Length: 75
Image 1: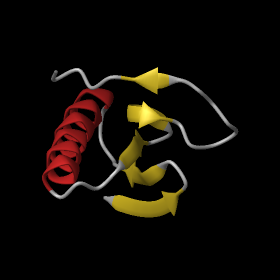
Image 2: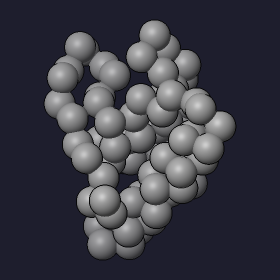
Image 3: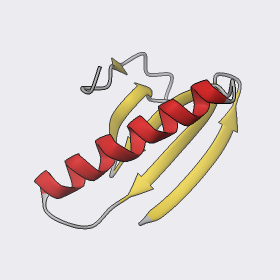
Image 4: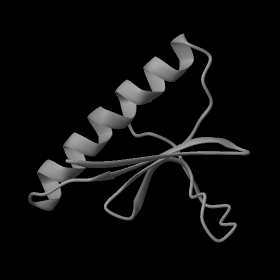
């Protein structure tokens, strides 16, 4: 797993790089995003986005001013 975290005006964006087939990467990405969301709510930390292998898993894409939102599928 590769990880990059960036703090911005809208909160923290987490980029994750995972290897594997699409199904396993998707499942891992959702599990990681869910844990990050739970943790961020518990400590009142603003999680703006989780991006895995270039796809938004949670929140808003913080690059190029995109307004695309994706709600987590576990809700």
